[in-house]
Length: 77
Image 1 (cartoon, rainbow, N blue to C red):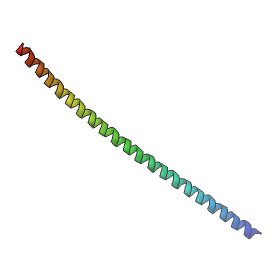
Image 2 (cartoon, helix red, strand yellow; image 1 turned 30 degrees about the vertical axis):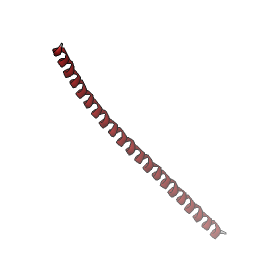
Image 3 (spheres, rainbow, N blue to C red; image 1 turned 90 degrees about the vertical axis):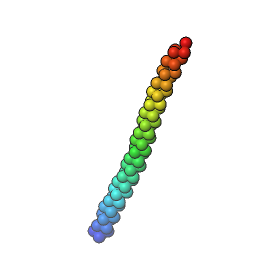
Image 4 (cartoon, helix red, strand yellow; image 1 turned 180 degrees about the vertical axis):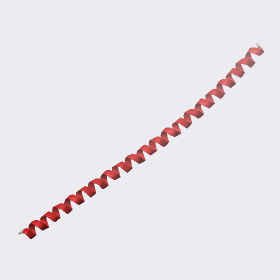
């Protein structure tokens, strides 16, 4: 009788241990997925900032050219 209870106790302990290991494995997997998504968003944000900086630089260049054209037109009048 005690042998059966002992075996049952061992089986329960092993089952709990396996459940915890599987649970933690899934939690680790979810964290890795979230981290890769976070890294993707960071890269996307960095690329957006670079594009915005380039656009601002080009806009500044266009403004200076427009100012020069306006100055030339005023000289012609």
